[in-house]
Length: 210
Image 1: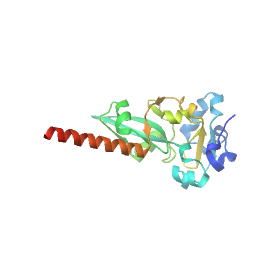
Image 2: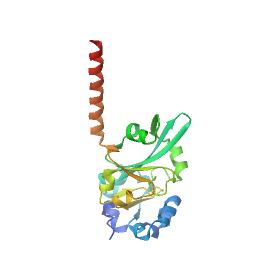
Image 3: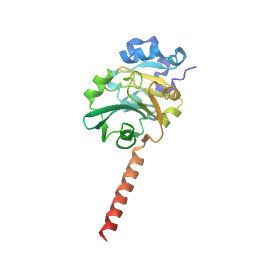
Image 4: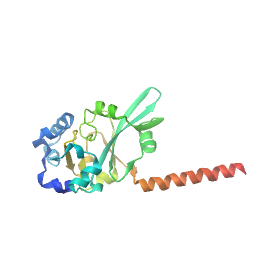
């Protein structure tokens, strides 16, 4: 039995995603058709106003909990002339550790969010609708443990006029998925860590100056 209540007021309108291919990006529809039918049936889709595709606006309008949405962000890691990509799936109340854990996973000297045009062209998905389903085969999909443990999460559908809902454990089993400890932290925690890091650097500088 599928539980799509995380979609808020849209839960009653949700249907199995493959029943509404018009609400799916092409890459997403192809990927879902390759799923085991039992897994595909766990993915629900609901139509939304495309102007409300951004997570905060969607949650506010449709009564979906912010901590029930998982954002899929595309990260580009660079070493010399080579650029490697990964997708990170983290709860909307947190941020991915792009310059730490993700950079190391990509074996890159520098890492940052991919430019919008690159993310759209490489995934074939609409900005604001990028999702971990149907990404390029050679991309790792890093899934935060909080997402994997969630009973259900809302994710993009490849287009801006709908949202998907699926169990966190299914997100953890998507092609290319790597469940990753400490992939994300709340902004408040990141701020505390940054302050501690600055304090440590100051202490070291003072010690060297003595």
